[in-house]
Image (tube, rainbow, N blue to C red; front, side, top):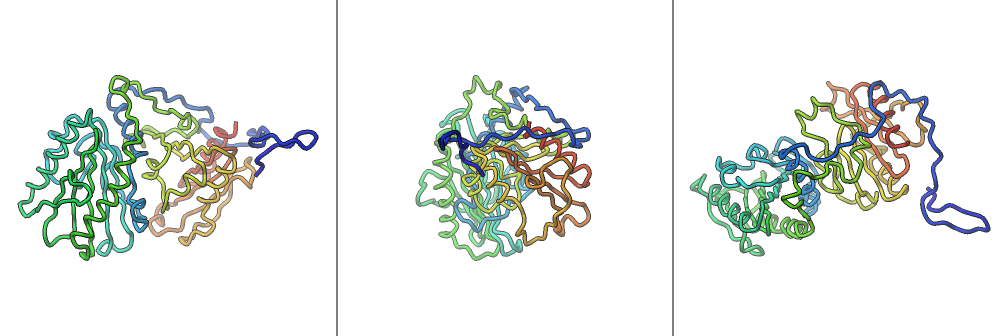
Length: 383
């Protein structure tokens, strides 16, 4: 962990130590690529909107930022990319979304839970939808709340104390609150559910406002791609996806294209994250999500911190160390087999490694395949 190189006469030169060029001749990479892939710009309008949604995702708050009890990311609740009504899934119960939000540019949605048994947990969903201008966004917020409100005649309006312009509703006797908040060219939708039935209306309002307290300032930081430049948006602005194992076409069809992020947006695909501390500790500047996960740090020490953070040496679920690929320094790579119930019928293995300013995680069901993928990913980053 050298932070400086030492020259003659005891002089110190700031910067990271220069690495020796690795010998990659003994790596077994199978059929996996070891040359960077150029992603270029969006191929069409849908690809451009999808990429803009990913950019927005880095500025959509996580419920755990408002309350650290929300530690479980829920799958199958929509998104994360929102291009039309289908991507909101069960979070929107009316059927007028596509009509009301016809000018939607892009959106991002996710749901987190407090964990434990479903009937005692709390869930918080948040979606941010982006429109061409503020007037359109405000009109959409009013329209979607109206349709949510009238979908069930038992709903009652709710006033958010801190956000008087928000439109919210609940149904007396339930512990669920939905709200739509216009802010500049964005609409933020928050749905809070307490399945234990303990939360009263003031508590639900407080939960919603706490998340808005974090979300709205984030939107002020986001810089949307100008409309006239959207179809030329860069798919890999930090050149990190180029160094990530590319997704297979079959996987793209089921889970969507690869993604480039700089922060919280990547958490939709990362497991075991309970805070955003790793971003600061690892000095993360870019994240690529494709067939593997690659994070670039601003320093070697930051990449080493990421390896330490994600290395499950104290994992209570019992990940068991397995052999590592030949040809990689044993101090740089760690491989494991998961021992979780949900993986008993389908083997689940992964390798983690750090090289230079990069940290990577690679998944694979079969050990040989995992080792080949890890070797190829190492070759992409170590050159």
